[in-house]
Image (cartoon, rainbow, N blue to C red; front, side, top):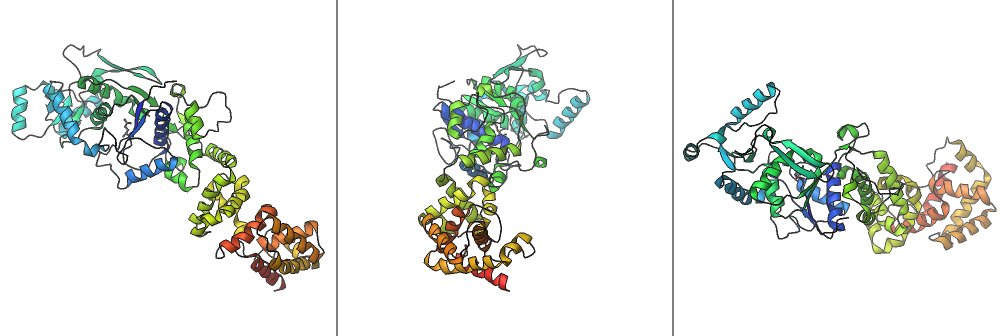
Length: 508
Ligand code: GLU
């Protein structure tokens, strides 16, 4: 494993929310930085103002933070190589472009967008790669200067082929950590634009100027950028900058093998976050997109274990399949592996978030109660948004059970059930069950008071308190109802009220 501290970067464009493919790129960069004791740079690529979405940058940063992926340099974190937003770096790009122009490695292109489009159409019709054939590259220097002085708008283009190159066979090669040697025919690249007519740098140019200025050692990104790389390699060379290592990650696809899209359901981190997945489950699903730990079939990994065992060189080159069912499974496993104290916060927050509990449920005095909630729901959930259903018995008002349900009828019509209910009501004043001890005493008091024991006793207690014949273990549930109704009386109906509503329903 490479232990030289590496400088890597994650460079999102604020054109939408963080989707799964980009989140995986961010995760793998984060891991490489952490496992080498290196640096993760966050750079916002916001030069494409047409596709810019308001609020997208904040959203992406928020999603990264939620995932727990911290960066060392970035727009908010600062650092020695800023600014870290491309929209604040125009001067840097202009300076680099001017250098290449002065060295004869670039030229002014006065061709109008219409002329360029017509050229591309002609090439396409002839079955060739659409590109710019370099007309303005052949302009005489004096002529170019005259047109510039006359105020004609121009873009700056890079001269791909050198006079010494054989235009038919010249190649641009680079090494990709996942694909080995990659090569492109230079003539198929055309003469790429560095600075547009409106003065904005293109993505390909800005990314190279920035990666060089920020001393990036490894460019790890999606393979949708593989075809951009040869042009970027040309820019590195012309600028006299050292080439970084490249690694292009295979695209993420749905279970049907198609590129992951809305058709497959949720594709953004924010959507999964809203569905109640834990960040660590999300990270686990992301790291398994194209990689798996050696000799560990369970594939359950904490972030620390990922840093321990991830190896870029073992990332698969074939497309990665994202399967939401696998995420559910992973998520369930992560939840089961948490200690109740670690599950307590997220479980309670999900109930507060959807309005079942007041904000006070997150205060220190409710810590014990939160642990009880975690123990109550832990076995039965794969996601935090299932806590509500799993804990619904806590919020039941008593009574209101389905009168047509034969089980209930049988259970509550009898005289035994009546005795149990009366005894429950009697006992609740002196032995309100708020913990294991008081619950024991309560059970005993109800048993003695009613003369009923075993199944008849417990079924009646359950139905009286929860309106249902099945549900979580009473030993966990009843103390939580008792203590919860004291802590959050507006949300959790008291045991006494529940018994009374049940009696009213039967009598009425
Ligand atoms: N800004 C580019 C994107 O969001 C990434 C560029 C790169 O990693 O080189 O696709």
